[in-house]
Length: 65
Image 1 (tube, rainbow, N blue to C red):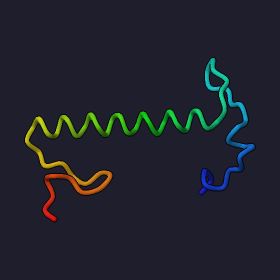
Image 2 (image 1 turned 180 degrees about the vertical axis):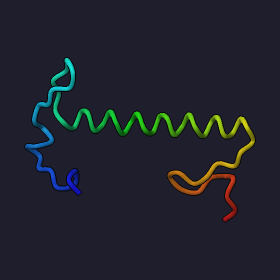
Image 3 (image 1 turned 90 degrees about the vertical axis):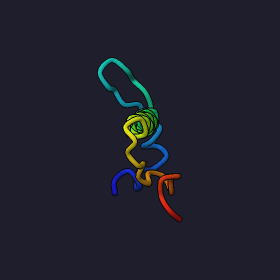
Image 4 (image 1 turned 180 degrees about the horizontal axis):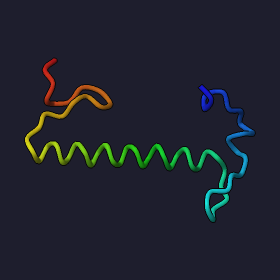
């Protein structure tokens, strides 16, 4: 959708978020890294509870090939 259609100029445009002014790409990168971090936390918690880890970014050792 909308993210895919943004131009380079739009990605580089400074955006105000609370007290910060950064290029739009900075916020998208932060959101992506933040999501990856929490998915990693979730898999650790599941592993500690002996719950099989579902495929997140591809097959896991808990899935049969």
